[in-house]
Image 1 (tube, helix red, strand yellow):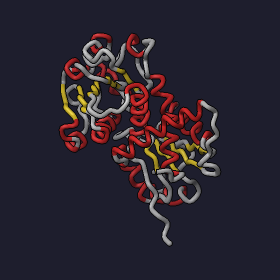
Image 2 (image 1 turned 180 degrees about the vertical axis):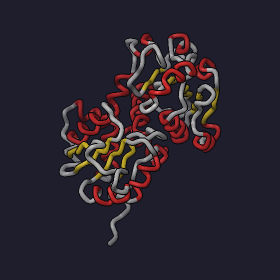
Image 3 (image 1 turned 90 degrees about the vertical axis):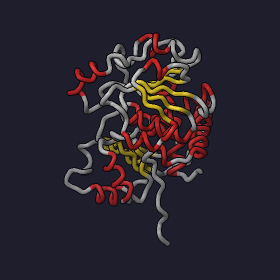
Length: 306
């Protein structure tokens, strides 16, 4: 019999709304199990290959720790350790690696590269960040929201800043979880027009960050210059000068509004220290939840828990 096609997670849209809600609930459950020191090893004997073409702290640590906690093993592969897109075709790398491991996590630049890899892989492929999307971070963000405020349905989220890969994944989250996303970006830094158009009335594009934040339940931002954009730093600082999330902007949101940031953060640029470091900040839980939400995803894709 032919081997069934593996299920991949390249985009948040690869999960239905119901599946996403179920996965988030499972992440909360796995977190509680860990707190109780309850053994849970559904991935015993399984290996996750981790390909990093872009460096990371949170992604590497959360996947390595998560695989150990699930009973498996994670194999770190840096750009020096692979031939991905460098001499060996991506298709061949996928064919070979997927015969040796049980899942592959890829953090790279071009989104097309991970799509090609997935088409030729025998095992699940997970998008750990591309220039187009960052769906894993949305799992952590939405788990954090669920723990503090419940379901996202009917809520208003304000995205302040660059229409980047994080913004694209928030657009997808709005589609799947039925909340409204207001995006405040300066001219020339809007999200991809096709991704935005596909979301229909789930999203609104604005220029004024204060208007976007008004009565928002959640305010989110990201660095102004992402990895690989360092040479644009000065130009971006000028373009985003009015887009800092600070106390004045948060005062326009609802009194119980949460603030999130995927980290690392540049205090004094996209967010003030007074916002990110306030005593009730959920940013640190948000970072921790990368571990728990990714464990739920690994369980779904590699242990067949649906």
